[in-house]
Image (cartoon, rainbow, N blue to C red; front, side, top):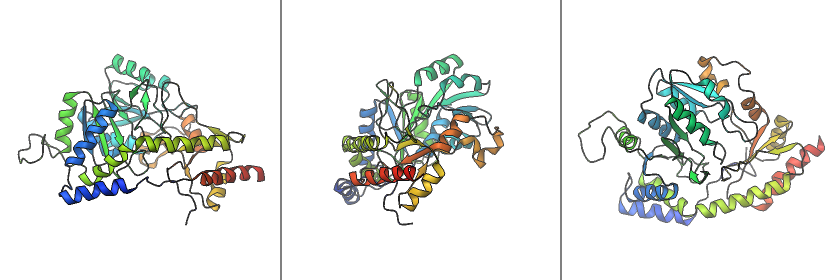
Length: 366
Protein backbone atom coordinates (compact mmCIF):
# COMPACT_ATOMS: atom_id res chain seq x y z
CA UNK A 1 0.00 0.00 0.00
CA UNK A 2 1.20 3.51 -0.81
CA UNK A 3 0.61 5.42 2.41
CA UNK A 4 0.04 9.12 2.73
CA UNK A 5 1.58 9.06 6.22
CA UNK A 6 4.15 6.49 7.32
CA UNK A 7 4.93 5.34 10.86
CA UNK A 8 8.64 5.95 10.44
CA UNK A 9 10.94 8.37 8.66
CA UNK A 10 14.58 8.85 9.73
CA UNK A 11 15.65 12.45 10.28
CA UNK A 12 18.64 12.66 7.93
CA UNK A 13 20.15 15.66 6.17
CA UNK A 14 23.51 16.85 4.85
CA UNK A 15 25.20 16.32 8.22
CA UNK A 16 24.99 12.53 7.96
CA UNK A 17 26.06 12.64 4.31
CA UNK A 18 29.13 14.77 5.06
CA UNK A 19 30.23 12.43 7.83
CA UNK A 20 29.82 9.43 5.55
CA UNK A 21 31.98 11.13 2.93
CA UNK A 22 34.69 11.68 5.54
CA UNK A 23 34.57 8.03 6.64
CA UNK A 24 34.78 6.78 3.06
CA UNK A 25 37.52 9.21 2.01
CA UNK A 26 39.68 8.31 4.99
CA UNK A 27 39.22 4.59 4.37
CA UNK A 28 37.74 3.79 7.78
CA UNK A 29 34.83 1.43 7.24
CA UNK A 30 35.33 -0.85 10.25
CA UNK A 31 35.36 0.65 13.76
CA UNK A 32 37.59 3.71 13.73
CA UNK A 33 37.60 7.46 14.51
CA UNK A 34 33.85 7.97 14.23
CA UNK A 35 33.25 4.92 16.43
CA UNK A 36 35.47 6.38 19.15
CA UNK A 37 33.75 9.77 18.86
CA UNK A 38 30.31 8.16 18.95
CA UNK A 39 31.16 6.20 22.10
CA UNK A 40 32.70 9.22 23.83
CA UNK A 41 29.71 11.46 23.09
CA UNK A 42 27.32 8.86 24.51
CA UNK A 43 29.48 8.37 27.61
CA UNK A 44 29.62 12.11 28.21
CA UNK A 45 25.83 12.40 27.86
CA UNK A 46 24.82 9.33 29.85
CA UNK A 47 27.59 9.41 32.44
CA UNK A 48 28.62 5.79 31.79
CA UNK A 49 32.17 4.92 32.80
CA UNK A 50 32.50 2.24 30.13
CA UNK A 51 30.83 1.57 26.79
CA UNK A 52 31.15 -0.82 23.86
CA UNK A 53 29.30 -1.01 20.57
CA UNK A 54 27.22 -3.92 19.28
CA UNK A 55 25.58 -4.84 15.98
CA UNK A 56 22.04 -4.25 17.25
CA UNK A 57 19.95 -4.06 20.40
CA UNK A 58 19.11 -7.77 20.46
CA UNK A 59 22.74 -8.82 20.37
CA UNK A 60 23.62 -6.08 22.86
CA UNK A 61 21.17 -7.64 25.33
CA UNK A 62 22.60 -11.10 24.61
CA UNK A 63 26.15 -9.85 25.22
CA UNK A 64 25.07 -8.09 28.40
CA UNK A 65 23.55 -11.27 29.77
CA UNK A 66 26.66 -13.27 28.91
CA UNK A 67 28.87 -10.63 30.52
CA UNK A 68 27.22 -11.16 33.92
CA UNK A 69 27.39 -14.94 33.62
CA UNK A 70 23.81 -15.85 32.70
CA UNK A 71 23.73 -19.47 31.53
CA UNK A 72 21.57 -22.53 30.97
CA UNK A 73 19.20 -23.20 33.85
CA UNK A 74 19.18 -19.63 35.16
CA UNK A 75 16.08 -17.44 35.26
CA UNK A 76 15.83 -13.78 34.27
CA UNK A 77 12.76 -11.71 35.15
CA UNK A 78 11.44 -9.43 32.40
CA UNK A 79 8.23 -7.56 31.58
CA UNK A 80 5.58 -9.41 29.57
CA UNK A 81 5.06 -6.23 27.53
CA UNK A 82 8.07 -5.64 25.30
CA UNK A 83 9.52 -6.38 21.91
CA UNK A 84 10.37 -10.06 21.51
CA UNK A 85 14.13 -9.41 21.72
CA UNK A 86 13.95 -8.69 25.45
CA UNK A 87 12.99 -12.30 26.09
CA UNK A 88 14.64 -14.04 23.14
CA UNK A 89 18.05 -12.71 24.20
CA UNK A 90 17.48 -14.45 27.55
CA UNK A 91 16.40 -17.68 25.88
CA UNK A 92 19.47 -17.76 23.65
CA UNK A 93 21.74 -17.90 26.71
CA UNK A 94 19.90 -21.07 27.74
CA UNK A 95 18.20 -19.24 30.59
CA UNK A 96 14.45 -19.04 31.18
CA UNK A 97 12.61 -15.73 30.74
CA UNK A 98 10.13 -15.17 33.57
CA UNK A 99 7.40 -12.68 32.70
CA UNK A 100 5.84 -10.02 34.92
CA UNK A 101 2.71 -7.99 34.14
CA UNK A 102 2.68 -4.21 33.67
CA UNK A 103 0.92 -1.23 35.22
CA UNK A 104 -2.21 -0.12 33.40
CA UNK A 105 -1.25 3.51 33.75
CA UNK A 106 2.22 3.78 32.19
CA UNK A 107 2.76 0.31 30.64
CA UNK A 108 5.99 -0.18 32.64
CA UNK A 109 6.73 -3.37 34.58
CA UNK A 110 4.66 -3.67 37.76
CA UNK A 111 7.40 -3.63 40.40
CA UNK A 112 4.95 -4.93 43.02
CA UNK A 113 4.68 -8.22 41.13
CA UNK A 114 8.38 -8.93 40.69
CA UNK A 115 9.26 -10.41 44.08
CA UNK A 116 6.79 -13.29 43.90
CA UNK A 117 8.46 -14.49 40.66
CA UNK A 118 11.92 -14.74 42.24
CA UNK A 119 13.15 -18.31 42.73
CA UNK A 120 16.40 -20.02 43.66
CA UNK A 121 17.27 -20.02 39.93
CA UNK A 122 16.72 -16.28 39.46
CA UNK A 123 19.97 -14.52 38.59
CA UNK A 124 18.88 -11.19 37.11
CA UNK A 125 16.07 -8.72 36.47
CA UNK A 126 15.71 -7.05 33.07
CA UNK A 127 13.69 -3.84 33.43
CA UNK A 128 12.56 -2.50 30.06
CA UNK A 129 12.09 1.25 29.71
CA UNK A 130 9.03 1.47 27.46
CA UNK A 131 8.01 4.15 24.97
CA UNK A 132 10.29 7.00 26.04
CA UNK A 133 9.85 6.74 29.81
CA UNK A 134 11.82 5.04 32.56
CA UNK A 135 10.30 2.32 34.70
CA UNK A 136 10.50 2.74 38.48
CA UNK A 137 14.04 1.60 39.23
CA UNK A 138 14.43 2.17 42.99
CA UNK A 139 12.19 -0.77 44.01
CA UNK A 140 13.99 -2.97 41.47
CA UNK A 141 17.37 -2.00 42.88
CA UNK A 142 16.17 -2.84 46.39
CA UNK A 143 15.00 -6.28 45.26
CA UNK A 144 18.26 -6.91 43.42
CA UNK A 145 20.25 -6.13 46.56
CA UNK A 146 17.94 -8.22 48.76
CA UNK A 147 18.25 -11.33 46.58
CA UNK A 148 21.76 -10.72 45.20
CA UNK A 149 20.54 -10.31 41.61
CA UNK A 150 22.06 -8.48 38.66
CA UNK A 151 20.17 -5.80 36.72
CA UNK A 152 20.33 -5.71 32.92
CA UNK A 153 18.53 -2.62 31.62
CA UNK A 154 16.80 -2.81 28.27
CA UNK A 155 16.87 0.88 27.39
CA UNK A 156 16.57 0.18 23.66
CA UNK A 157 14.08 3.07 23.37
CA UNK A 158 15.73 5.06 26.13
CA UNK A 159 18.24 7.50 24.66
CA UNK A 160 17.74 10.82 26.46
CA UNK A 161 15.51 9.24 29.12
CA UNK A 162 16.46 9.89 32.75
CA UNK A 163 15.17 8.28 35.93
CA UNK A 164 15.48 10.75 38.82
CA UNK A 165 18.22 12.53 36.85
CA UNK A 166 20.21 9.37 36.06
CA UNK A 167 20.26 8.15 32.46
CA UNK A 168 18.61 4.84 31.69
CA UNK A 169 21.08 2.10 30.92
CA UNK A 170 23.57 3.15 33.61
CA UNK A 171 21.36 2.57 36.66
CA UNK A 172 21.78 -1.22 36.87
CA UNK A 173 24.84 -3.41 36.39
CA UNK A 174 24.76 -3.18 32.61
CA UNK A 175 22.37 -1.67 30.07
CA UNK A 176 21.84 -1.19 26.36
CA UNK A 177 20.54 1.48 23.99
CA UNK A 178 19.46 0.62 20.45
CA UNK A 179 19.99 2.72 17.31
CA UNK A 180 17.57 0.84 15.07
CA UNK A 181 15.76 2.83 12.37
CA UNK A 182 12.78 3.76 14.56
CA UNK A 183 14.81 4.95 17.55
CA UNK A 184 15.27 8.59 18.59
CA UNK A 185 18.90 8.36 17.48
CA UNK A 186 19.47 5.96 14.60
CA UNK A 187 22.37 4.38 12.75
CA UNK A 188 20.06 2.01 10.85
CA UNK A 189 21.20 -0.93 12.96
CA UNK A 190 23.47 -0.82 15.99
CA UNK A 191 23.53 -0.46 19.75
CA UNK A 192 25.72 0.47 22.69
CA UNK A 193 26.26 -1.38 25.96
CA UNK A 194 26.87 0.74 29.06
CA UNK A 195 28.30 -0.19 32.44
CA UNK A 196 30.17 1.27 35.40
CA UNK A 197 31.65 -2.14 36.26
CA UNK A 198 35.19 -2.63 34.95
CA UNK A 199 34.99 -6.44 35.14
CA UNK A 200 31.82 -6.46 33.03
CA UNK A 201 33.45 -4.06 30.57
CA UNK A 202 36.51 -6.29 30.19
CA UNK A 203 34.28 -9.32 29.61
CA UNK A 204 32.26 -7.42 27.00
CA UNK A 205 35.43 -6.49 25.12
CA UNK A 206 36.35 -10.16 24.83
CA UNK A 207 32.87 -11.36 23.88
CA UNK A 208 32.28 -8.83 21.11
CA UNK A 209 35.74 -8.96 19.51
CA UNK A 210 36.52 -12.62 18.81
CA UNK A 211 37.79 -13.25 22.34
CA UNK A 212 40.37 -10.44 22.21
CA UNK A 213 40.44 -7.21 24.22
CA UNK A 214 41.56 -5.33 21.08
CA UNK A 215 41.77 -5.90 17.34
CA UNK A 216 45.06 -6.28 15.52
CA UNK A 217 46.25 -9.42 17.29
CA UNK A 218 45.81 -13.10 16.52
CA UNK A 219 46.04 -14.18 20.14
CA UNK A 220 42.58 -14.98 21.52
CA UNK A 221 42.58 -15.50 25.31
CA UNK A 222 38.87 -16.35 25.39
CA UNK A 223 36.04 -17.42 23.12
CA UNK A 224 34.15 -14.59 21.48
CA UNK A 225 32.43 -13.57 18.28
CA UNK A 226 32.16 -10.51 16.06
CA UNK A 227 29.56 -8.13 17.47
CA UNK A 228 31.12 -4.90 16.15
CA UNK A 229 29.59 -1.93 14.32
CA UNK A 230 31.16 -0.01 11.42
CA UNK A 231 32.58 3.49 11.24
CA UNK A 232 30.03 4.24 8.53
CA UNK A 233 27.20 3.61 10.97
CA UNK A 234 28.94 5.63 13.67
CA UNK A 235 29.50 8.50 11.22
CA UNK A 236 25.72 8.67 10.89
CA UNK A 237 25.39 8.30 14.66
CA UNK A 238 27.68 11.21 15.44
CA UNK A 239 25.59 13.49 13.21
CA UNK A 240 22.42 12.23 14.89
CA UNK A 241 23.78 12.87 18.39
CA UNK A 242 24.74 16.41 17.46
CA UNK A 243 21.15 17.22 16.56
CA UNK A 244 19.46 15.30 19.37
CA UNK A 245 18.11 18.49 20.95
CA UNK A 246 16.64 19.46 17.60
CA UNK A 247 15.02 16.03 17.23
CA UNK A 248 13.64 16.21 20.76
CA UNK A 249 12.19 19.68 20.18
CA UNK A 250 10.38 18.55 17.02
CA UNK A 251 9.02 15.40 18.67
CA UNK A 252 7.79 17.34 21.71
CA UNK A 253 6.07 19.81 19.40
CA UNK A 254 4.44 16.95 17.50
CA UNK A 255 3.34 15.26 20.72
CA UNK A 256 1.73 18.48 21.95
CA UNK A 257 -0.14 18.82 18.66
CA UNK A 258 -1.59 15.36 19.18
CA UNK A 259 -2.70 16.09 22.72
CA UNK A 260 -4.30 19.37 21.68
CA UNK A 261 -6.24 17.69 18.88
CA UNK A 262 -7.18 14.39 20.56
CA UNK A 263 -7.73 15.16 24.23
CA UNK A 264 -11.38 16.10 23.69
CA UNK A 265 -12.23 12.75 22.09
CA UNK A 266 -13.74 10.64 24.90
CA UNK A 267 -12.89 7.34 23.22
CA UNK A 268 -9.16 8.16 23.35
CA UNK A 269 -6.81 8.09 26.38
CA UNK A 270 -3.10 8.88 26.46
CA UNK A 271 -0.59 6.73 28.33
CA UNK A 272 0.22 8.39 31.65
CA UNK A 273 3.56 10.11 32.30
CA UNK A 274 5.55 9.65 35.51
CA UNK A 275 7.15 12.27 37.72
CA UNK A 276 10.30 10.19 38.29
CA UNK A 277 11.08 10.15 34.55
CA UNK A 278 11.41 12.72 31.83
CA UNK A 279 9.68 11.93 28.55
CA UNK A 280 11.31 11.53 25.15
CA UNK A 281 8.38 10.84 22.80
CA UNK A 282 9.06 7.55 21.05
CA UNK A 283 5.65 7.36 19.46
CA UNK A 284 2.28 8.77 20.48
CA UNK A 285 0.72 5.88 22.34
CA UNK A 286 -2.98 5.91 23.06
CA UNK A 287 -5.75 3.61 24.20
CA UNK A 288 -8.62 3.59 21.76
CA UNK A 289 -12.12 2.13 21.78
CA UNK A 290 -13.10 -0.11 18.85
CA UNK A 291 -9.43 -0.45 18.02
CA UNK A 292 -9.67 -2.99 15.19
CA UNK A 293 -12.24 -0.89 13.36
CA UNK A 294 -10.25 2.29 13.95
CA UNK A 295 -7.11 0.69 12.51
CA UNK A 296 -9.02 -0.47 9.43
CA UNK A 297 -10.45 3.03 8.98
CA UNK A 298 -7.07 4.74 9.33
CA UNK A 299 -5.42 2.32 6.91
CA UNK A 300 -8.20 2.98 4.39
CA UNK A 301 -7.32 6.66 4.73
CA UNK A 302 -3.67 5.86 3.93
CA UNK A 303 -2.32 6.27 7.48
CA UNK A 304 0.10 3.50 8.41
CA UNK A 305 -0.83 2.11 11.83
CA UNK A 306 0.98 0.12 14.49
CA UNK A 307 -0.44 -1.63 17.53
CA UNK A 308 1.33 -1.80 20.86
CA UNK A 309 3.45 -4.82 21.77
CA UNK A 310 1.94 -8.28 21.49
CA UNK A 311 2.26 -9.87 24.97
CA UNK A 312 5.30 -12.11 25.24
CA UNK A 313 3.42 -14.90 27.02
CA UNK A 314 1.24 -15.24 23.90
CA UNK A 315 4.13 -15.39 21.46
CA UNK A 316 4.23 -18.77 19.69
CA UNK A 317 7.97 -19.06 20.36
CA UNK A 318 7.35 -18.92 24.13
CA UNK A 319 4.56 -21.49 24.31
CA UNK A 320 7.01 -23.83 26.04
CA UNK A 321 6.84 -21.60 29.14
CA UNK A 322 3.21 -22.71 29.56
CA UNK A 323 1.68 -19.51 30.88
CA UNK A 324 -2.09 -19.37 31.16
CA UNK A 325 -4.24 -17.19 28.95
CA UNK A 326 -5.20 -14.72 31.68
CA UNK A 327 -1.93 -14.55 33.64
CA UNK A 328 -1.12 -11.02 32.41
CA UNK A 329 -4.36 -9.03 32.11
CA UNK A 330 -2.74 -5.59 31.93
CA UNK A 331 -0.38 -6.63 29.17
CA UNK A 332 -3.31 -8.14 27.28
CA UNK A 333 -5.34 -4.99 27.73
CA UNK A 334 -2.51 -2.79 26.44
CA UNK A 335 -2.36 -4.81 23.23
CA UNK A 336 -6.12 -4.99 22.80
CA UNK A 337 -6.61 -1.25 23.29
CA UNK A 338 -3.27 0.28 22.32
CA UNK A 339 -2.28 2.16 19.20
CA UNK A 340 0.98 3.91 18.26
CA UNK A 341 0.67 7.05 16.17
CA UNK A 342 3.65 8.37 14.17
CA UNK A 343 5.70 11.19 15.66
CA UNK A 344 8.78 11.31 13.42
CA UNK A 345 10.45 14.57 12.49
CA UNK A 346 9.23 14.41 8.90
CA UNK A 347 5.64 15.05 9.92
CA UNK A 348 4.12 18.45 9.18
CA UNK A 349 1.43 20.09 11.29
CA UNK A 350 -1.09 19.34 8.54
CA UNK A 351 -0.16 15.64 8.70
CA UNK A 352 -0.86 15.43 12.42
CA UNK A 353 -4.12 17.30 12.01
CA UNK A 354 -5.08 14.90 9.22
CA UNK A 355 -4.42 11.93 11.51
CA UNK A 356 -6.38 13.47 14.36
CA UNK A 357 -9.27 14.52 12.15
CA UNK A 358 -9.42 11.00 10.72
CA UNK A 359 -9.68 9.56 14.22
CA UNK A 360 -12.30 12.13 15.21
CA UNK A 361 -14.36 11.42 12.10
CA UNK A 362 -14.25 7.67 12.79
CA UNK A 363 -15.82 8.09 16.22
CA UNK A 364 -18.33 10.67 15.02
CA UNK A 365 -19.51 8.28 12.30
CA UNK A 366 -19.79 5.46 14.86
